Amino acid sequence: MGNGARNGIAEVVALAEALNAPVLTTFKAKGLLSDSHPLAGGVLGRSGTPVAAWFMNQADLIIVFGASFSDHTGISTTRPIIQVDFDRMMLGKFHAVDEGIWGDGGFGQYMAEFLTAVKYGMNITHVLLNNAELGKISKEQRDGHWPVWQTGLHNPNFADYATLCGGLGRRASSTGELRAALDAALSYDGPALVEVISDSLLT
Image (tube, rainbow, N blue to C red; front, side, top):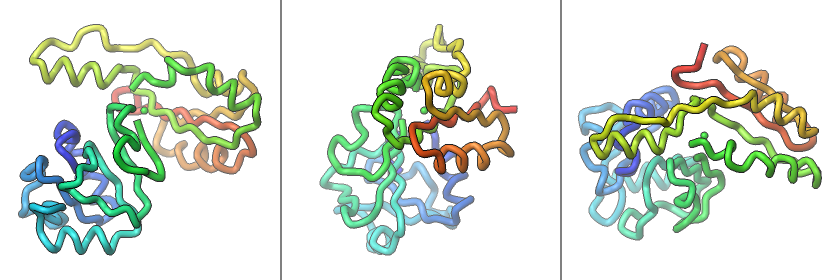
């Protein structure tokens, strides 16, 4: 967990607890998770702790939240990596990653690219987290101590859009529907999209 995840600490910790996975922090993120937490693994990198390095080197998978992959942190290049960041330009910018996750109004800006995937029969599964908000902009407004203004979105049914384009569209509007939607999309031979209704929209 890097300093960029400082506004999502509760979510990162909840995931760690669900996986029973240790949480390492970058030097800038030191203190975001208390050392008294049973899953706290310490600071990673040149200013870090040996136990943090041990955890990283023993990991099957590294999930990176809001970290810049600086040389000082020294995130391993020998493990599969999922990078999560609110800034799309940070995904894979300084370090190759196996998967990048970015769910901030981006699909609405590039919807036509799904048609390209259909045209060329690209076997890609897109998981879209729809919270009807430009979350990155809301975050920037909060960080500037301004009121959150005009960041709500009125979205179409993106799953229906994917189907109209000639691909497979599935929508999960409850947690119970998510597994079936993902299974259908991942087994589909061609471009598929799973729209997950999340946060305040989740039923």
